[in-house]
Length: 449
Image (cartoon, rainbow, N blue to C red; front, side):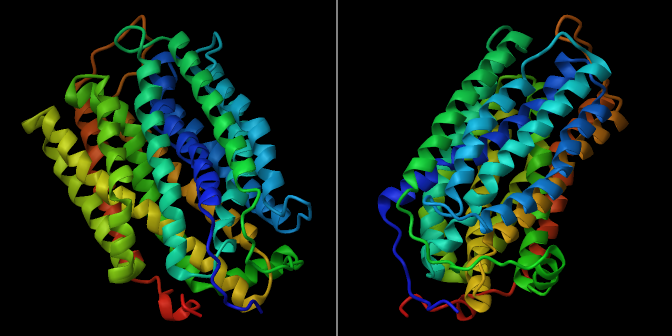
């Protein structure tokens, strides 16, 4: 068993680790924000099929993420168990991401098949980097509250990266004409791919001196033994359900955002300013959420964050009455809650990993993280599918840039419901799930031990 000694993470390592979040934020945000719209409005893919394409490759995460986690747990190298995988992801993800938006001369079902294959490759390359990356904080320190402080740096970089993804990417994608062109989407993909490459390499080199306080011995049990042990880890199970519920709501709002800007606000370029309102609080409220987590514990702070998110989302239903300014103000409230959700989710995951290692003496942070990210990613990807189905039920008509169509009123109503009502109900459900999460400071090693 590990001796519970707190380890202070050097500032340079915090920065090096944090910059890797450009990968997390970008790969989640850009496809979540633009891919469904890109397929329905540029490749003439029916909305329901586009939703399937966005969802189907994510199901692959249920296979590849736990495998990568298991492999990284058992990796022995002079770089440690995690960093070789960071480098593997950096060498493959940027190219795969670019190909998703490369815009071949295809439409309809062939275009959907092409995007599905490229998105599957992107999901695989993303797993190589993201699973070991997310496992690292639980192995850097034993201190319950320092994990939140460490991940505060990560969240700052997520805020910057999300701003780039949600403001710069749509700006480039819609830069040529009102709605953009296939060429502008291709330029966007190349720009984001270069940013991904630089950030992922920066994280690989920046974590070279990261402390390793986790279990020194990898769990050599077979899958049946490992899964049986995980099924008995109640904090991990409830945290996974919590994260899935919250990210389902977030992913649905991301998929709906371009439609909300275009058909509810009446300005496609409002996608950029809405995203700025969402991510601005991430950059400004991290110290506040760290203090709230100490004051009310992480579970209490999570309830507050989810409540703010739900209130802002529900208020956005009045956008047709009060206009664009109202929409931006409500999304600002959503952003404050979203900042807390993101920080606290990953801080809780680091707690679960650290406590598991302390109790078992086995290194299986990769397996835990792989399962967590796989299930979360798979469930959250249904946000785009659900929204695609809502659009289809509302009578949304797919189109191409050179032949735009006027959407029926029922489709415009479906956009509003998909952006506001349904995500608000989902996020409120996460408040009930939060109450089932029981890992609190007394269950973790004391900070001054």
